Length: 251
Image (cartoon, rainbow, N blue to C red; front, side):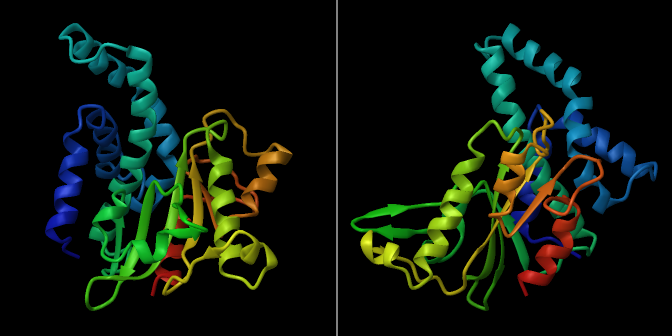
């Protein structure tokens, strides 16, 4: 399958980011030597991020020496989150390029570039608006390139971060789409062409997913994924399952 110009550009931008180069090189080595298949790359994001850490830190040190980076710790924290997001997009596009993901399905970290995004992602609460914690949007399109169906994917390297904000928005979305006195009480309005799926993905750096509080949190999502090569329970799926999930739900 041939990717479109924007998808090819996105791949190139990701591969050219200095902190992504060691990570992508490691994945390409594994793929070229048949150590792993393209779909399986999704399940090993934790390993890629941690295994490439020393090489990434060397690149950060070089930039510090040249005055391009001032705060090392802030740079490391920022890179961890951005690398996770970029890795998912990179793996998604490479799988699409190889035919694992349907041609009519797209991925973006820039909501505002998607046609008619407001119809899906804005909830009116009285005279104010609420927008989701959407790190990545995966969507199919109509003939006029507007969104047909979509998945809002929130990403967190650690559940200590703002994971709760995502499922709170999911609850707000469901209240707004139901006949409810709460909806009337707060003057909530929301009428998307199709209700988005709200999903969550993590690499679980701190082994938090099995705590009762976090296991309960995952039940609010339409689906939750983990990019770590471990045995998973019913409440969370291997990240490679996202291929099947988008192909089934976004048609």
